[in-house]
Length: 266
Image (cartoon, rainbow, N blue to C red; front, side):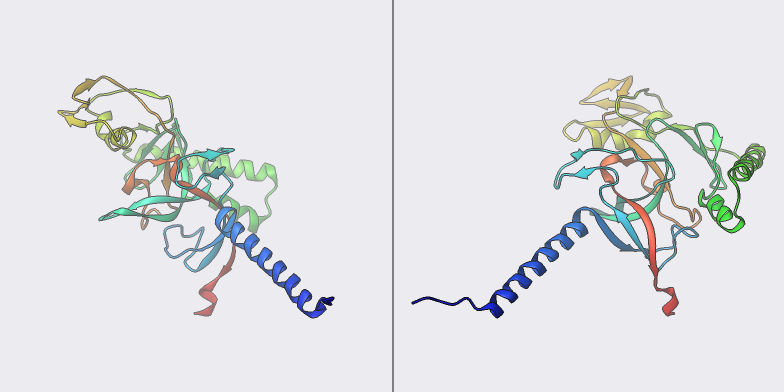
């Protein structure tokens, strides 16, 4: 007996395969390349608003291998990038949360903050937030020369006012291979990093001195790169002032652009 193929049945089989392939491609993009996230807090006002839907790139800084700290094809994280990062949740040591914040200092940078939440990076007072100039350029149609002059004017005003504020202790953002001298000022700043970088060792601090496996340490060599993040809404935020240095492995994605906002429904 010769069976004649059912053209109608084959047509739907082909369509099913195409739909299944499209589904797999969509899932792959969602989990490994680009994702849309909802901004649910005011921490990044006035740059990002509650109700914004934001595209993020999960491969902007490299490809993370699941269940490990390995990152293939790593790319440089730039100062002022808005990033998605994992951070500890207050009063919850098991489940980290993911938040959006601005990377303001890179490995090896020095920082200090004033009582008015102003930030000095590598000896220069920074604008708050950096997105202000971009908004001015958009509305005023500034030329490159005008933009440069405005930026110089802003920096001059900022640095002129910097002497009026009291700044905190200047600290170094640790980077892989950096060696620091340990004293009563530096040890408290980096104690949490000593513990996280040496999970198998016995870490203790006594009278401002660091002991690793019961041996006093005069110097310390950092093993990883770290970053410092500050949210644009510095009066109402959760950032490095709360949870400290951010390991590079905790930075998961880069913010791209806002594609929709739900506030128009209110």
